[in-house]
Length: 161
Image 1 (tube, rainbow, N blue to C red):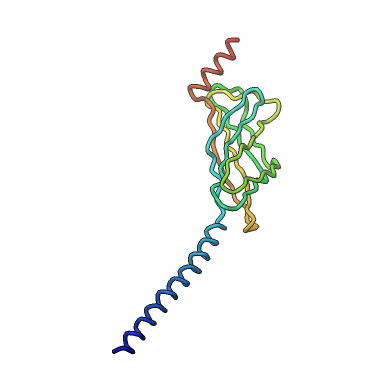
Image 2: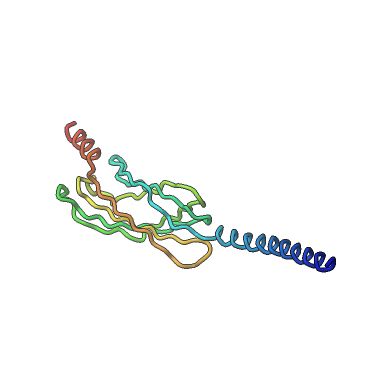
């Protein structure tokens, strides 16, 4: 009976130690894998600056690897109030790196010589990005319609001046 108890105690201790060591190595490997998962940029906000004629996008990188936006493009579709014709600008070089777990402002300058945005104007922006774990290219598309209540009030104040 004595040898049985000693053998059982050694076996249980071996199982506990083996389980602990195995789970430690498994959790470390999983942690490393999760740390290398790239995030996709999330556009949190877009604000139009009338004076500079550009849209500033607040872009978040929720992943743990840096993302590089290397090209921008956009489509302009006029609203009812606009006299401007629709146009497309593409292949705009960017080379903007968004560090891991951070937020960055990315500016998109609208076409030179065009009128300021009016209510109902739509700008559909495309950001092409890549991450260091792959040579693949990815796109994020965001639509921005100008003409919220706050923007219309500011526009009418400027026209009144």
